[in-house]
Image 1 (cartoon, helix red, strand yellow):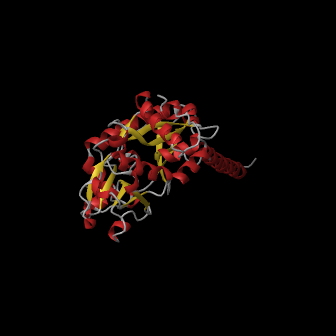
Image 2 (cartoon, one colour):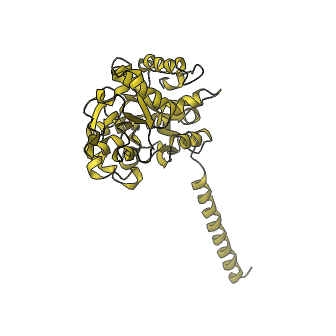
Image 3 (cartoon, rainbow, N blue to C red):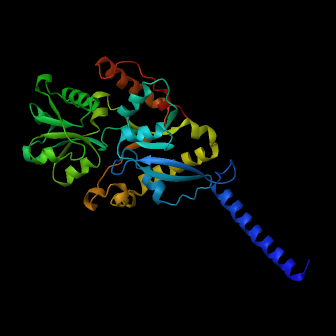
Length: 332
């Protein structure tokens, strides 16, 4: 072999080695990490502008220095879509899903998820409230007799509102429950059609900012369950993620705890984040006064009241059969 030929062969060998090495590198980057190799991606669904669980905002915006899990927040438009995406594996977890949507899934034969957090309706916390119309002269819940009071357009919400008004002293024949559009919850009050609304944050703070009167904070707990906290929503994660990625799951749970502490101790900073488009684009005046729901770790301590709540729905025909609530209260 001549020197020139030898140099050409050597050059080709170097080029081939470089190409092979490049593709090996690409292959390694594309391959999902094995246990212990690096962070596992957890796709966490959340609803922009919904405050049933504020922690996805914090997990996305605060640097919590995670090693085993990489949390990717994924916006979903509504609870039904969120549950569907969880069911088909497009996301691994979903935050702040109302109890009504979860019960609809729990009635099926398989529920391959469990709750990692519960959002509670608590007396004095205005995450769930009844707000009176200032223009209608509403100053007290007793003023709502024979007046149209609007709820979310779900059977459970209307049922709850009717029970609350009766428990607050309004005669059953004087209760007038109507519905509002979730996209424009205050439109009926502004048009003079609704004397009050039974609503959630941030609609409650929007109403307060416009001068309407918050009549009751945490009315489900106060009027129906002797002041005991009641599950209003839950944050769910798949059993598959829990079983396949134990280290990532535990770090995610630890990160959730940190986020819960941040929400409690840095409210002004977290509220400011809610003005960003990704999280609802609230006006600064509304964002600075929103109340976050009380978040707790699932345990049997919250189970008894919630089972009473579900049994009440069965008794009144809101749901037709027994629902196994155990996935919401398993401590993991």
